[in-house]
Length: 372
Image (cartoon, rainbow, N blue to C red):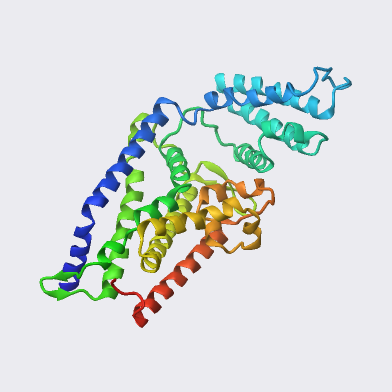
C-alpha cells in the first residue's frame, strides 16, 4: 500500500505536463488523418502524375538529338527518353484501373533505371532520378506484387497503410521528442524532499517510479497514434494488414504492413527507454535541462554531420535512432555508403539500455546518484 501511495504521488506531480503532451499528440495525429483524407495521400494517380517531371528536366540537360535506336543520341539520353515515355503507360493503367499493366510498366521502368546507373554521364542526371537503393526497393516491391498475383491499391491510404506511414513519420523524430519530454525527469525533484504522509521515499524507488511513470506515458502516446487513426476506418476502410512494404535490412526485403508496424513499435519502445535512462544520468551529471537536451541532440547529430563515423563505429546506437531512415536504406546514399541492419541496430540499442541501467544501479549503490 505504501509503495502504491508513493507511485501515485510521483505520477500526480507530472499530471499537467502529461495531459498537455497527450492532447498535443492527439491533435497532431487527427490533423494528419484529416490531411491524408483530404489530400488523398497514397493515391497512385496523384503520386505518379508528378514523377515524370524530374525525368523531363533530365532530358532537357541534353542537346535535342535523335533518340531512336540507331540515332546519334547518347545511350543515357536514349534511356531517359524511354523512361519518360513509360509514364504515360502508367498513367493510362491507373486511370483505366489495369493493375497488371501498371505493374509491368513499373518493372520496365525500374529496369531502365538500373541500366542507366551503369551508363556514361549518369552523374549528369543522377539528381533527377531515384537512387539505386530506391530503385531496388521499387523493383522488389513490384516483382513481389507480380509473383504473388496481388492487386495494386488504386485508392488513397486506408487504416493499415496509414499506420505504416504515420509510424515512419513519427519514428524519424521520435527519439528527439522523447529526449525533450524526459529532459527534466529528475531535476526538479532533486531539489525537494519527497514525503508521503510522513514516510520518506527511498531514492532508488523514486528513480524507478519516475522512469516507469514516463514509460507509461510513452505507451499512452503509442496507443494514441493508433486510436486517433481510427477515423480512417470510416473514410477509407481497414486495408490489408499483409500488404507488402519494401524495406532495407542489410539487404532489400519485403515486410507485410503488420510486421513493419510491429518493428516500428518495438523500436519506439526501446528508444523511449534508452532516452529516459540517458536523461536520468545527464540530469544528475549536468544538473541542467537545456544542457541535457543539448548533449542528447549533439549525440544524434554527430553521425549526420560526420557520416564516415557510421562505418567507423557501427555499434553506435545513435546511428539507428532514426529507424525509418535505416529501413529506407538512406545510409547507402551517403558519401561513404554503409549498409545498416535494423535488427542489429535494435540489438545495439538494447545493449545500450542494459549498460545505462548498470550505470544507474552503480550510481545508486555507491551514493553517487542522489538528491541535489
